[in-house]
Image 1 (cartoon, rainbow, N blue to C red):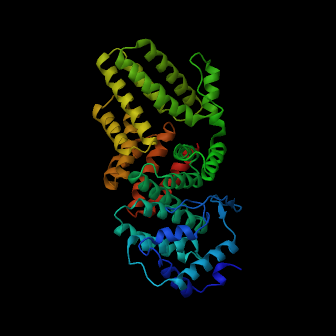
Image 2 (tube, rainbow, N blue to C red):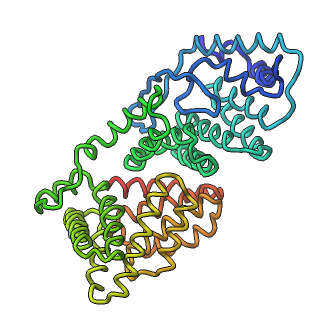
Image 3 (cartoon, helix red, strand yellow):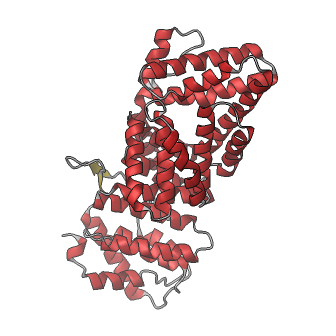
Length: 434
C-alpha cells in the first residue's frame, strides 16, 4: 500500500508540522530527522547525513531523465509511523526558525505524494528558510535535492537546471560541501552534459573516495568517460594519425588538454625564456587544434595557435599572449576546484591584458561571466554574454558557443526569465554533443 493511501493530505500536513517537535532537544529538529531517516530515500544527497543504500533507476521509453526507486513503499511507511509516534510523545514545539522550516521541507520531500504537491510545498518552505538562514549552504543543498526529485516526477529539464544552479550556490559558500558536489554532478548527468558531469563526479571523488556514494560516483565516471580514460594525450613524438585518433576518441579532453595544459605551459615557458619547451608545447597544441578542426570539431584551439604564430615576430605581443594564456590556464584550474574568487581574478587579468586572440578573449569572457553568475550579478553576466553569443560562429566554435549559452541560461534562470532559459540550455546541450 502506498503512503498516500494511508494518510490524508490534511493528516500529512499535521504530521509534517509536528515532526519539528523534539522532546530532548527542541532547538535541533534536523538532528532528530537525521536519526529518524535510517538510509537514503531519494537519489540526491541532503544536508542531513543519511546512510548510503543503492537506488534502482529506470528510464521510461522516450524519456531521458531516469526515475529513482529508492526505497520501497513499506520502508517509507515504517518511517512515517515512527515520526507519528514521535509526535504523540512530544510535549514541546520548535519555533518558526530556519532549521524548523527546513525540517518540514525535508519531510515534505521524503514523504512526497505522486501529484507533486508536497514537493511544491518543500520548495516554498526552503525559500522561506533561505531568507532566514544565517548559514544558508544547507538550505541550498536541500533545494537542489528537491528540484532533482521533482525533475523525476515532472520530466521537466528546467528543474534540472534549477537543481544545478542551487548546488552551485551551495558550493560558492562551501566549496568542500560533498552533498552539493554530488547534486551538481547528478543534475549535469541527467541533463545530458556528459563532459561536465564526468568532471563534476571526479570533483566529488576528491572530497569522498571511500563511501557508497563514492562508488556510485565512480560508476558514473566510468560510464560517462570510458573512452577519455583510455585515451591519454599523444606523446610529444606522436604521428599525425595518432593525434587525429586522439581527437576523434576524446574531442572534449583533447580541446581541454590543448587550452588548459599545453598553451598554459607554453605561456609559462615563454615568460621564463625557455624557448625549447615553449616551442614543443606550441607544436603539440597546434597538432591537436588542427586535428579537431579537420574533423569538424571546436576550432578555437587552432585559432588560438594561429594568433600566437601570427605575432611570433613581435616579442612584446608574444609575451602579452603568454601572460594571458598562463592566467587563463590558472583560472581554469581554480574554476574546476570551485575556487571562484581566484578563478574570477585570473579571468579578469586575461581581459585586462587584451591579448590579440579572439578565441582567448571570448573563452576568458565567458568564464568570467560564469563567475559573475556565481556572485549573483546576473545582469552583468547577461550584458557580457549577449553580444558574444551573437558574434560567435556555432560551426567553428562548438564548445565555446555551448558554454556561452549554458552560462547565460543559468543567469536568466536565476532572474526568472524562463521563456528563454530552457531553449538556451537545450541548445547548449546539442552543441556540446556535437
